Length: 83
Image (spheres, rainbow, N blue to C red):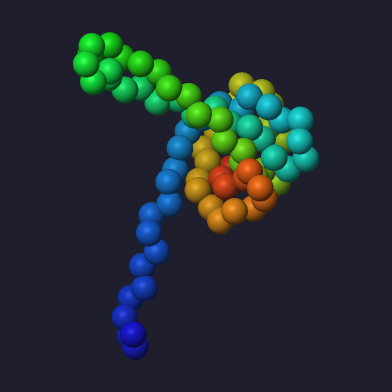
Protein backbone atom coordinates (compact mmCIF):
# COMPACT_ATOMS: atom_id res chain seq x y z
CA UNK A 1 0.00 0.00 0.00
CA UNK A 2 3.00 2.29 -0.01
CA UNK A 3 2.74 5.11 -2.53
CA UNK A 4 -0.65 3.89 -3.77
CA UNK A 5 -3.28 6.47 -4.50
CA UNK A 6 -6.26 5.87 -2.23
CA UNK A 7 -9.40 7.02 -4.02
CA UNK A 8 -12.66 7.57 -2.18
CA UNK A 9 -15.84 6.64 -4.04
CA UNK A 10 -17.84 9.51 -5.45
CA UNK A 11 -20.62 10.60 -3.12
CA UNK A 12 -24.17 10.98 -4.38
CA UNK A 13 -25.20 14.57 -5.10
CA UNK A 14 -28.87 15.47 -5.56
CA UNK A 15 -30.90 18.64 -6.07
CA UNK A 16 -34.15 19.15 -4.22
CA UNK A 17 -36.60 21.53 -2.59
CA UNK A 18 -36.79 22.37 1.11
CA UNK A 19 -40.15 21.26 2.51
CA UNK A 20 -39.49 21.79 6.23
CA UNK A 21 -37.10 23.95 8.23
CA UNK A 22 -38.61 23.64 11.71
CA UNK A 23 -35.71 21.71 13.23
CA UNK A 24 -32.45 23.15 14.50
CA UNK A 25 -29.60 22.61 11.96
CA UNK A 26 -31.74 20.17 9.95
CA UNK A 27 -33.92 20.62 6.87
CA UNK A 28 -36.16 18.15 5.07
CA UNK A 29 -35.47 18.09 1.34
CA UNK A 30 -37.79 16.57 -1.26
CA UNK A 31 -35.89 15.01 -4.16
CA UNK A 32 -37.93 14.24 -7.27
CA UNK A 33 -36.92 11.99 -10.14
CA UNK A 34 -38.71 11.07 -13.34
CA UNK A 35 -38.76 7.62 -14.82
CA UNK A 36 -40.64 5.81 -17.50
CA UNK A 37 -43.03 3.01 -16.53
CA UNK A 38 -41.52 -0.25 -17.75
CA UNK A 39 -44.74 -1.64 -19.25
CA UNK A 40 -46.88 1.35 -20.18
CA UNK A 41 -44.24 3.93 -21.01
CA UNK A 42 -45.87 6.74 -19.05
CA UNK A 43 -43.48 9.17 -17.34
CA UNK A 44 -43.85 8.89 -13.57
CA UNK A 45 -42.51 11.31 -10.96
CA UNK A 46 -41.23 9.70 -7.78
CA UNK A 47 -40.29 11.73 -4.71
CA UNK A 48 -38.08 10.98 -1.74
CA UNK A 49 -37.75 13.07 1.42
CA UNK A 50 -34.34 13.15 3.08
CA UNK A 51 -33.12 14.82 6.25
CA UNK A 52 -30.09 17.02 5.58
CA UNK A 53 -27.70 18.75 7.97
CA UNK A 54 -27.58 22.53 7.52
CA UNK A 55 -25.54 24.75 9.82
CA UNK A 56 -24.38 27.30 7.25
CA UNK A 57 -27.35 29.54 6.47
CA UNK A 58 -31.06 29.92 7.11
CA UNK A 59 -33.11 28.16 4.44
CA UNK A 60 -36.75 28.86 3.72
CA UNK A 61 -39.44 26.45 2.51
CA UNK A 62 -39.33 26.24 -1.28
CA UNK A 63 -35.61 26.97 -1.62
CA UNK A 64 -33.71 24.88 -4.16
CA UNK A 65 -30.71 23.19 -2.53
CA UNK A 66 -28.01 20.68 -3.40
CA UNK A 67 -27.38 17.86 -0.92
CA UNK A 68 -24.49 15.43 -0.74
CA UNK A 69 -24.35 12.00 0.83
CA UNK A 70 -22.33 11.82 4.04
CA UNK A 71 -21.68 9.63 7.06
CA UNK A 72 -24.59 9.03 9.46
CA UNK A 73 -25.02 12.19 11.53
CA UNK A 74 -28.04 10.98 13.53
CA UNK A 75 -30.75 8.34 13.35
CA UNK A 76 -32.24 9.83 10.17
CA UNK A 77 -29.66 12.30 8.80
CA UNK A 78 -27.43 10.89 6.06
CA UNK A 79 -27.17 13.99 3.83
CA UNK A 80 -25.56 17.42 4.09
CA UNK A 81 -26.54 20.70 2.42
CA UNK A 82 -23.76 21.93 0.14
CA UNK A 83 -22.91 25.57 0.85
